[in-house]
Image (cartoon, rainbow, N blue to C red; front, side, top):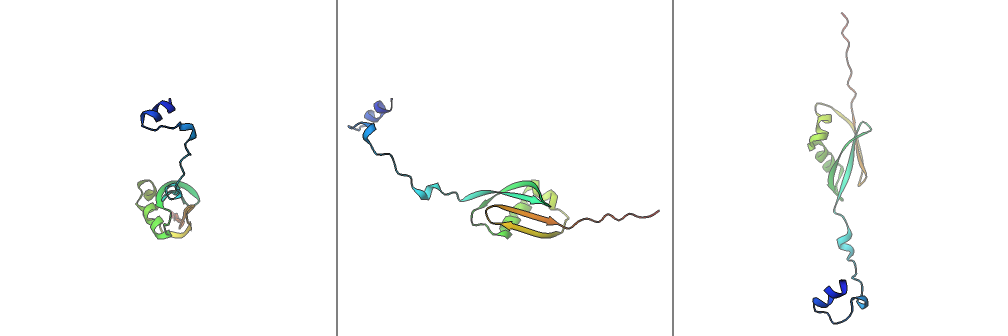
Length: 102
């Protein structure tokens, strides 16, 4: 079937003798990645970031994400651990529950 279509496209030689197309490496590279985001060591979601994304940009995208923002609202960030292209881990301050004696 491929041979028939090849001839109908106007080629006079057999498709079997044509060279296989070369891949262009520029088209094989991804420009964006899916970055997992952990909050206090638990994976809570992912964000799409550029491959060259910096820590501040990744944190901003994570804090704007609907699913992740609910974990960050009203909390103080103690530490951010960012491994470029691999993961963003946000450590939050522990909430101290004060017990009022009655």
